[in-house]
Image (tube, rainbow, N blue to C red):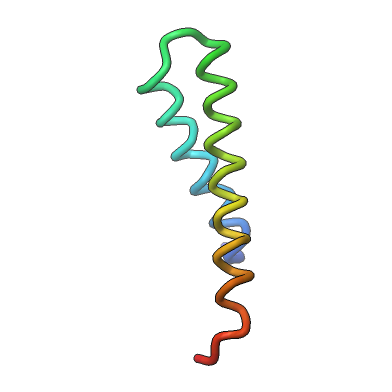
Length: 58
């Protein structure tokens, strides 16, 4: 199975945000809200870093 970079990023963000939410918050509502916040933060930072790095030559 071939996975694109974007799919790998989304899966990584989903798994890590789920674990972070479960180990840091006690109430299910807090866990959900924190998990969504961390997930969206991962995606936003990844897009920002990608956008900043785009014009750099390799």
